[in-house]
Length: 519
Image (cartoon, rainbow, N blue to C red; front, side, top):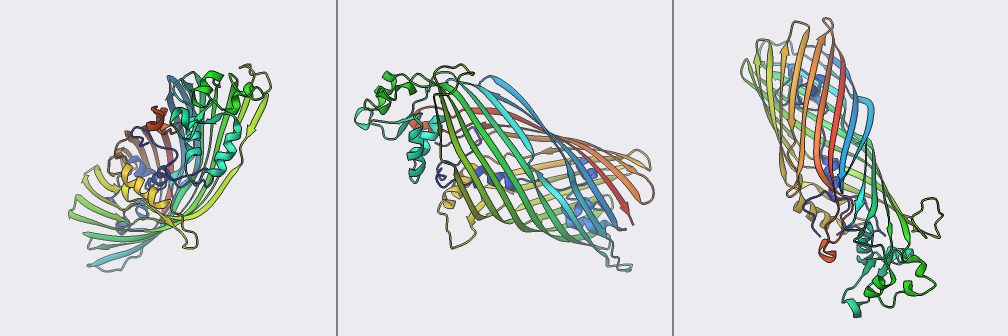
């Protein structure tokens, strides 16, 4: 059942409906992939900051950059994020948009000079709040599927060990039936829904929330040649996801049911109204995940020459404690015909499946190196960052309740994810003594072993010195992420069918404005 061409939305090998949990392999990536919180200046430079100093973003970037400050500084960054999703599903293209406004960063750096002419020049301190992930997004898509049905997935779940409650419950929906092993040689359940005929399908995903890092950092300057720094960050996040999958189709004929189960109750005259009937299915899932954690960063910047900087940053994993609450249910409406104005002759409502769990998650180590070259009227800077996503790991938060599924999830993480290199490059030109222009480019490495994931961004920025103390920076960043997603996952070997895949082009346009003052 390994899916090599799409991003799974459920780890069916370890999650049961009766004990529904949200900790899946794709959630591990969501909570490990974050942006470096940055001012509009650094955003305009494509977030390339490992070898740069003197910007308030150093608190969350390379803390060694705090050593470059010769004055105290305070700033706040406002942000507007516009999401655009274009999704292709069985030949139908759907476009959705979602916007969000907020505060991306607020911080202060205190300049603490030593008053020494040689040796250590200053020991500066910084405090900041940074939004490192914005989860707010909405996408939906629809199409006509003539190959499979979401009922395949639900029958797969019925056959899984530990799903007795859901199995007994969903069997009463009349949209599934049990194989007659003596006739077919198969065990388990099969869809009463027609499998290889047109079914109208609609999938909706609504995400809310953000992830932030509050940090305290220290940076020092040795002879204007060598800079070191360290920071400790406290991370908190809240992630909400609500999904609904709607399918409209027809149920099978009596001969089709008899072929797999000659003794089916559906062949009884009192139940045969469920055959050759129109149906509408609603499969609903919601998740609220909250977490908090701690991490540390170490950084250095060395100046081999007055016009060159070389930087290094080491970021420990974020050791996070997470609380999940999930809720799921499925409804099926049966109609005599496909007329949308008629009332259903029967409605099935599943039990409501709720679950909650506390657990731990460890994100990967991150290592970044950067270089910056300074010119008379500007600079060029570039970073390379290494992250091994296969090291993401779940574990139990308490020995009093040990969830046995984490070993399987962690094994799947190692099978699906790999290491990646992220590249960032940016440049700045001083147009005059008060105005500067910036541009940058990001390439995000593919974290998957066997899945295509194209992720690029470009940025433009403008900086204005309003007077000796006040400054204003603006930036716009446009990111394009192209990937594939399974609308639902079927046991491909058992059904001899592919899981249906949606092609997603996710574009994020980010507008940032920083207001700051030196004192």
